Length: 339
Image (cartoon, rainbow, N blue to C red; front, side, top):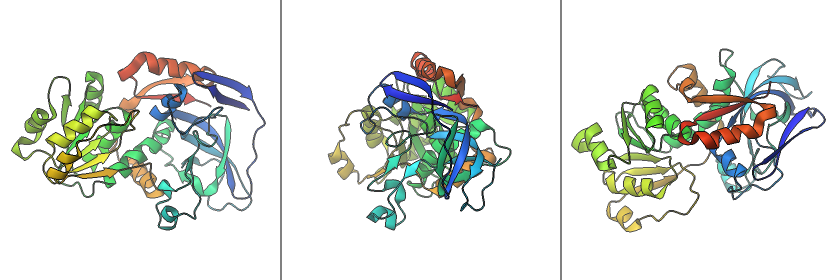
């Protein structure tokens, strides 16, 4: 079978390797679509601190079950599925209390363990998440980033009737804004890209603002009036966005840190203290986040078509990264068509 291996930053080698076979508690998947994630791009540029080379990427995907192990129940060939990419120990404190997504020994397929950038892929049966029959394979590959958004929004608590600012309208920021809206919030999305702001409007977000042209204070006043907002989700991974949120959010407000920071940001903790703000982190997801993401996509509460930027066949895997680089802010979700 064909397999794509990133041998070094910026270098992907396609080769033939034996088709794997599932063990008793495993499932063999025929991979159909792989989504290229922002973290994948960091690996491509050699900027991911927790990934070494060579590495087989791929953790956002949709597939069809090809074969199941002899001990597997409830799954059968032909089912449309995706799978959670976390490998956890099950023994540490976070795992024992149910927070396996922040396992002390967490490994993620596509980064610290081999991912699914190959025609067939074996994974544990308990990682499988079944997709609705009516899902497109593109929707299936977007369940993973949508689950990131679901988990991040849940970290903010009940958002029904609340004013929320989402800073950053890239793929994750767009999905976070859509999930927050689906959970009952009035949402303001900000970015420095007019293209991404137009997409977030197409996805049903009522308020959008270009941070180059309008301060967050001004945008919040326009969107929400004097009340402002008391929840912010930082999805840009940028110090100016964090700083703007801390200064503009209502006293006693909650800031959820969603974005991945390439450099350590400077945070005005004196202002955090003085305004009695709450800073909350978020990482990945649990199974219930996958299920909620599927529910929202199936119900049309999360729109996925506007995020589809382009497709590349597996033989052009490296060209997909070049395309993302050239497109810059006009690239949202690029897919690898494996089969």
